[in-house]
Length: 310
Image (cartoon, rainbow, N blue to C red; front, side, top):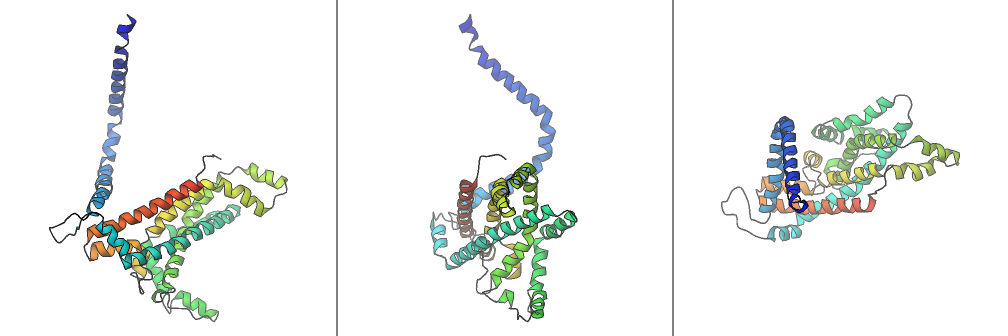
């Protein structure tokens, strides 16, 4: 009797799971209906587009000619030997190397300072957060005006008897000028991230350190930094991804000039895709950039990610 009853148990459990699944679907189908338009848009314009870009990266694909032959890795080999691509990667690496640590350090210091402010705390946070919610196109045009030879920055320098450069038309100052604008616009967002992390640190740690006679600097390095590890990892990874994809501010402020000193990888992709209509080649460059971003993001997570929960 027992051996005859055993085969029916998996069938009964499977049937019960199916009934439970149908019961949940009947209960939640309106929610799926509401999110279906957004899901369809994401599927078509994100997932399908990503797969299609990988497909055309192996083809001589443009929007003009009908012949789109398969070329294998030729587009990738061409990109590695393209002088413009190499310049753009060099500029982008320099941009990332400056932007990521600068924004992280300045945002962290502002967060620590803002966490200690007792009066006017909301005003302090608002002042630094306003540039974050301002559209990047607006801020870029504002800084173009500030960087003019007779603009606000050079006028301030004249007040202390310093002759300001022609910021956006000098190859030695164009990229640093874009970096300054980016730092100004991003520190407010990451300051809020660090403020949220600081709020989660139990005050008992600082009280114990004070009892043990630890100074502010020692407390900052031994308590604040370790307990902000998750926030720091988030800042490092998201800043790295965003910095490698810089486009808008460089495109508006300099168009990649002067002398390709502000040419970024995303601008090169735009140039080949929408000015020369070489979609396959532009997709190959994009996937090379994806590989670089994936490598550095994985490396950061591997080096700094901790399983410890505070």
